[in-house]
Amino acid sequence: MLFRESSLALYRILDFGPILDSLFVSAEPQLCTICRGVLQHCNTHLETLCTQVSTQAFEYTDFKITFSISIIAYLKRLLVIGMAEEELGKAFRYKQTKDRSVVDFKEVYKWIMSPLIAKRLNVPANLDGTFLIHVSFAQREEGGGAFHENTVIQGVQNEMESFSGMLGKGAKWKAKQDWKHKKDNHANQSGAVKGAEQVISSVSKLALPLLKELDVFKSQEIAQIDLNTLMSVDCTMDNILLYGRYVKLSREVSQTPWNLGTKRMHSVQALISDNLLPIFGSKQAFLHAAGREDIDVRMLGRGRPFVMEFVNPKKSLSCQGQIEDKGLRKAINSSLVYCHEFKIVDKEFFDSLKDIEISKAKSYSCMVWVKRRITPQDCNKLSTLVSELHVQQTTPIRVLHRRSLAVREKVIHRLQATYINQHYMHICLLASAGTYIKEFVHGDLGRTTPSVGSLLESEADILQLDVTNVYDSVQSVAELPLSKLFEIEVVSDGEADDGEA
Ligand SMILES: [Zn+2]
Image (cartoon, rainbow, N blue to C red; front, side, top):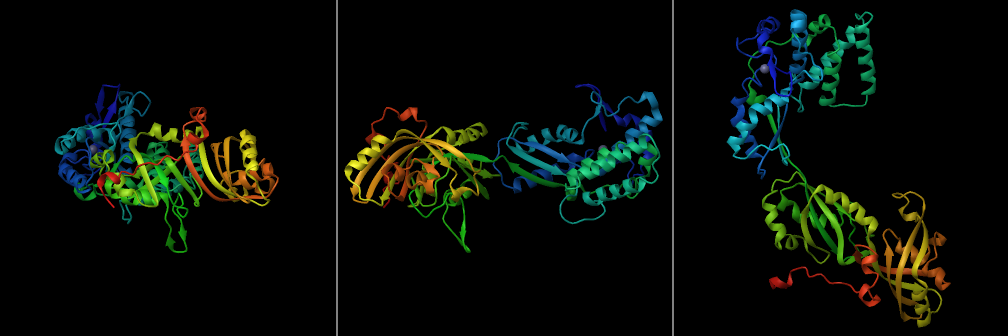
């Protein structure tokens, strides 16, 4: 057991060897009674550890490790410190205080194992790396038995309860109150890790005579355990964030997955991720898009920006080569959805995607029906009336389940209406982000004012809607003539170059 005296100076409990020996009966004279050899002999399981890492088949260029050991080791350490204090008095200066603390088992393990693993896996250790190897010697998996963490924690908790009858006044009573208080606070929390922290914190406040009485110190014979069997190795890779823009050519594809009865319907998320998951060696992916369009609305032009988050990817290196070339496009692009402008992005970029949703302006194209007879002059009038037009929108009933009730002011920057026949017109418009276009056309029973209907003094409805482009800002397109502004850019999906039919 190591103690930290300053950032550089360390101090070993081994120098109190006689105390240690008096505490626990060890089957082997040289076996450490606190960690049961986990730290003492940790190099003996190096080979098994590295084999297990290889079996999990991740691609990585460096690694970092975390480590967990049974709560029993932490409890024994409390006892040893308590005993050392009692036996040595002032000569033992290494209490668990801020500046003189016990070095955590995790740190010791990293110091010992990092260079060995680095040599064996032939990659450097990197604290800021993306590949994490978690090594555990605590039994946390399903099952049970006397050494299972939950069993140990429950046992100590029960004992602490039984102590409450024996506790007197003063510090002991305080310890009990703290314990009760903590227990109430965490009543709803579960899991071995949380439970372990609680138990260690409570036990650390016990007076030494009570501490010595804990069953956990008596029940086991300290025998060498098979570290290779006890050890579990669990690798994880940081999620990969893939940026792109998607063009949706169908009026029957929603953005997020949904089912009709038992039938899984097409979704943008599934259409993009299904074929990409194998490329990233990932089992799960989440679509984070800058806004959304309704299922019956096409997303045209250059498409909507999105980030696809691939969870725990195994092919984080080999996927890189496929992002540059046409591999990803080929994997995804279909007659329903296609994507382009792929690049791997970082967390900051990912966060900024949410701001994109607020700052962008979008252009739309829609087919509109008007109840009264209209003339080409009505279309011209509408085009003139709607210029930097401020619109008040009360949250539409149809989205009230996901957005709060409020009146929001939106701006229809520009509008171009084209006469088709006595009851139909085609409208292109540029609106600020978050405008409900359908409601701006039909007025939503007066919840959106003004509307195309109210401006034409008639009932109006929207038959088809497309998002034709997502612009960086209104300013960036302020000077564009209407014909250019509402032009639908056609993105090559790259297939033509390959000579495919
Ligand atoms: Zn040890």
